[in-house]
Amino acid sequence: MVDQDLDGYPGITVVLTGTVFGEVYVAQRITTTYRSEAVTDNSVDGLVSFTDEQKILGATEPVLAEPNPSSPDPDKERSYFMTRRIDDGADCAWVLENAEALFGAPL
Image (cartoon, rainbow, N blue to C red; front, side, top):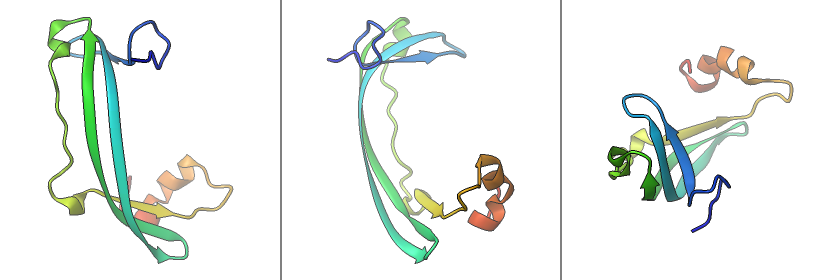
């Protein structure tokens, strides 16, 4: 196992705060598939699917060592993406201000 974030623990370290505080050391493999089509010359939309495999290598608190499985929404139509071409000078603030015109809804 490789210490990917070079902190002295195997895998990557996830720091958690909230109800439980601690660190979890994990190895994770995610594969993502995009099916898309050009809607216009300036936009590409499609569906996304993924597989997620995670192994907990250790944790600072026993409760954090318990598996916490995740899965995509079973309705594949709810896992989609939308891309839009924007001008070179546009920044994140501009995208947020124009989200409804770009994507049909505010972000």
